[in-house]
Length: 537
Image (cartoon, rainbow, N blue to C red; front, top):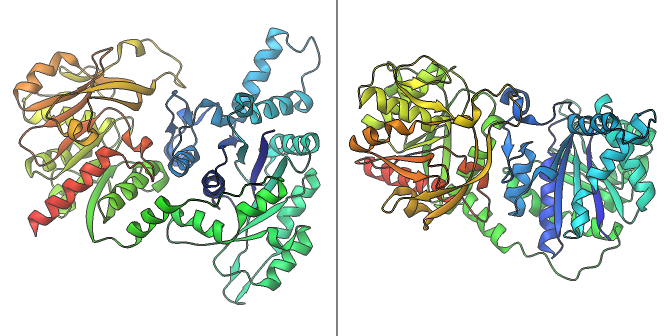
């Protein structure tokens, strides 16, 4: 029988439920168990696809084209297995399904209510991954914080599942905060007590408390928390602040979180967790042999979560190259031809980030012009690749006014045009080119050398594409079209000849980078930045 673990949060948001869930899953996976993680978000959007990155961080895209919460990126990076549409569910999707059923007459004329109809649909989704029989344990992270009105149906569903399945088949881990009052030089447990009280009022007794803290939890504090929150002392887990999220599985192993979970779920496994590769990665990450400084040019740089997967991919690639990657964020709205040298000349490489719309586009184009002319290693992703095409068309091909029709619909040189199947669409959510698509790589290209094979699959999220009418002009001027979708002949990768490292990709390689499999393009880009740094010195 599949076992269920629910991860809830209290006291404060952004405590790291996703990291705790992924870390626990990593430990259980390392013990030979088959584990899946899913995220249930209380907001009413059907998915994060239409959310501004400032609202909820990056929109993470899966192989099957689901636009999901960024925590799914953590799940994949930790477990090294892909997620799918089934791994992320929102309140909007739940209500949409129930309302559609009501319109179809599924409920046979009954009054549709939160209980049982909404909660039944939530429970069905919570157990959907178990139907295949592929998993021993399913971990479900509930977004938001206990006490939020919008999360109440999810909490009620957890209460019902615990009652239906029994305490040995479904447990609740509550992640909470133990604040440290510097004036009193004391850790305070009262916020956690109130958070657990909120859970108890809903009818849920947490089985394990994971306590985020700046300071060590001594035995006295653990006993106090256990007594007042009605859990065993060994179920009070310390989650002390660490220098990198990749240390958390090791800390949870030290705190015996996995053993406590196995005991409560009555699961027996004699296999010790094999974390050899993980520890090797951490050792390399903490003891780099050098460092490189890479500029990240984007328009959402104020919020690091907006480019979360890019930052994590740089960490993986840095460890692979035994160097520390220092990412310097540069707001594209603040960049222009006059200050490009000041902002970019000291860098060892520059990545121009994705981002829809016209805001900040000219800054990206000016940055790429400076990078191309001064032969600084360049990596453009999605809109960054499109900006590279526009810059090349304007300044090398001398196509005056070259642009993307996304920003300038009446441009005389639409080097970036809307995809044919996107024309006439009025619905914004879930209608882009989404998910994994094939890409055939040209021999003797940067991409082919990085991947080590000719056919790859990468994840996409876009409406606009390189206009194939300009392919020959680009090729003749030295821009190599090194990656093509073999089915629709769409341009996927462009590379500039006679440049140390210059590549733009239409897809999102950052989404497939993991600890155990750093993305080859990020690895090769960081390697080129190291080489460029050495040449300068």
